[in-house]
Image (cartoon, rainbow, N blue to C red; front, side, top):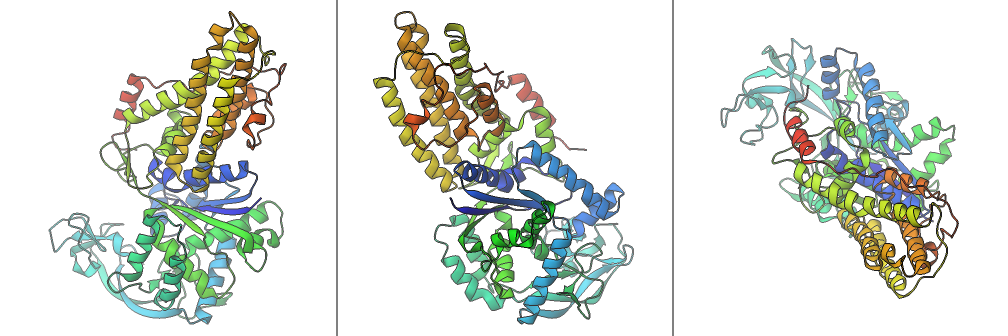
Length: 572
């Protein structure tokens, strides 16, 4: 048994996430966590809501609520949706927690003591109407390059030209629309990442098993242009973690907070501390996962995230940990994903285009979505959700292959032998060939899962289901029953054991369906099959079972057309 620490990129607090967000981090992380638990490993699976920064303040203002109240409510909403999708977090924390406040301030103090932080005086745009400094993206105006009238202060979305707020023609506040802006001088803290460039470079080079997507993004930030730049870690905002040097005040930083991208990854650690507190455990119980001097030296740490989050997790967060000079557990494997697009375009939170997590659960159970998203995960390239493909995958894979097998074998047994595993006959050549094939297929499935090849794992699992269907169709116990009921009983007995096997193997992908199958079979032992020959005999003659309700209903053409229309517009 090994110890595995797993973190998923933490979702931002300002609203409900769409399915593209789900498949880019939380869902594949859950798949891996469930698989490792099923194999008997000790797992700590952590996630949280990312609650600081300007977008949180603006979302709260739009909702007409104090930002702390808004964040607390949205955390409950996101937590509930995560439960709805069967995400098996050991703890779902909050980056606004007291633990994250203390740890973020601690890291800042350690970095400052080590000479890895410098103060910088810089000029920023201040909105008199809003009474606040505006981050670059919250300043709009006309692009001097192409004339687009909604260019942001960091980049023009129309022509992609990089901009500074002072480049914009007729700049205005994106918060209030006010043009009463002025440039003021302000001081901020910068993390001197450039000092740790060589250490980061060598560390990344040591990760030979990382996806090319991950290392290529990290190397680009390290070496392109001027190379790795120092990064601001403070902001002039009201909502956030107050800037302190450890437990001490930081002269000149009064009224400022740490930048959300500094404190958000630290929440991974703080989340474990939150878990310990919530479960009445001592600090030693979370420190054994995160401190290599307190037991974490044998932990394997895996992160899951979309490609847009890679730079912060391969450079900024590691620089924070390395720069602290303390023995924190560094990530061993970083599994990154490309983007999931939606039906000929992109998912858009701002435009309400696509399916959002709460809406998905309103129209179909979680397993339908889990299967499609994981079997089409955007690993080597971007992938695209279409209703036609979704309908086809659900109907063929879930309804026709897995669901049909379980329904067919349980109903046949009930009609010919009753609701108990039948006695008679024994496994012969056909059964031996099946078990041999399945043993090889199981090994391939396990390898794909261990290597976090999500799409390949789904394909190997489906092949296992399909091989069971081929066997049943080939031996046809419903026909053999007329001439050799004893051998038909043996084939039926194997079929019922195959249903149990499918449930156990499918549990990381389809936890709800798996549980339904196991409940119907009255199978309490959910152990992973180490020896298929023995495993496929464990439901013995006389073992009672029930015929389960339909596991997966087919999606009709009318449903697919209706949903395609419904989710193409703007969400309220």
